[in-house]
Length: 141
Image (tube, rainbow, N blue to C red):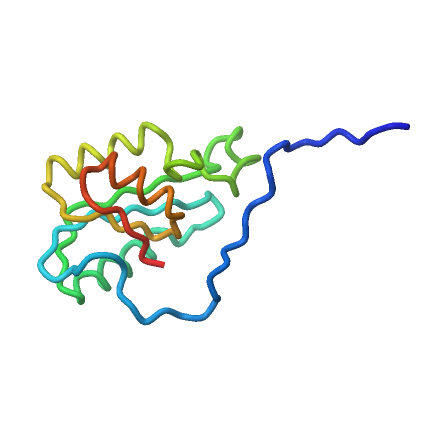
């Protein structure tokens, strides 16, 4: 009997067991007076990433935070990246290793109190990124 070849041998994505309703609590630590770095992970199909980054910066500023840096990770800009556009660069950090080092250096230079991701992070990603950056990594979503 002929078996079909599987193109992707990764396990299927896990579903989030939390309810899908909106949450009323603010993300992570108290942001009043905090210096934050904003990080966004976007596919090449998302043309409005600059607008989303500006909206997030305005929201964080309204909460009392001071935005000291912004980092954007794009996926699918190159020809090879288009095929893997929906997948994160790394399941541990969401970002590529070079971009993670760039964010860590920016946090150290600016003395950031937190790194705010526009994308949802898993608990494991939060722990790994917090350790790598030296300050809490939290998700705005």
